[in-house]
Image 1 (tube, protein in one colour):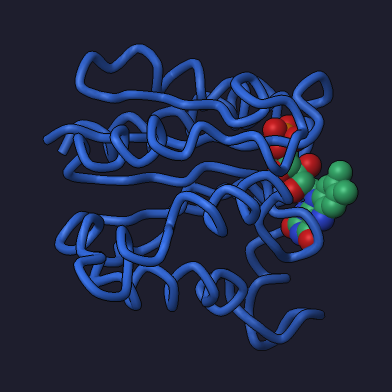
Image 2: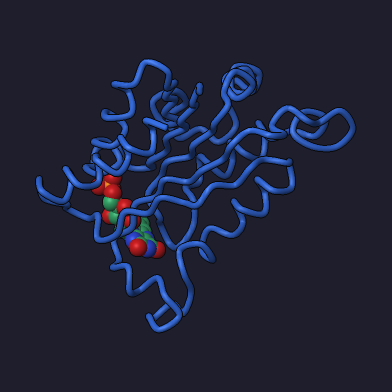
Length: 174
Ligand SMILES: Cc1cc2nc3c(=O)[nH]c(=O)nc-3n(C[C@H](O)[C@H](O)[C@H](O)COP(=O)(O)O)c2cc1C
């Protein structure tokens, strides 16, 4: 199975967890990793749309990896979807490029897992927070996979980072 991982972090110099997970992902030979800020900086309007679409076309599984910031995806990832998931390619007449591919989110969160529950302060789960991505994936005919969420990821120590990486490695190994 060929996997494309699109990574986005608006503050790469402050990132520990996403950076470390990205490194782990890059060690897999059948995984292509594309880091949006490395490729395009913070420019919301300069994506190489065709190159990004080709990367998606080559993959059986597409993973979007990002830190949850204000219960949302990153600005670059949102702008990316707006242009790469184009009419006539991802949806609309002839727009079937993503159909049948697996789609999965790998997200890191500063808050605890309990926060992401109906009993927690936000009164919604991570699945619910990520529902725009679920809706988008389903809209273009992708096979939406259960998200992988890493909680209390801010300043994760070595032991926690090791357990996060093990989860990612086992997900990428199937
Ligand atoms: C601007 C900003 C907003 C954040 N918003 C959230 C949030 O809404 N929910 C949450 O659980 N964590 C939030 N966090 C914490 C980050 O998700 C966490 O630090 C990150 O996932 C850790 O990965 P990193 O080391 O790669 O940055 C926020 C952090 C920043 C800087």
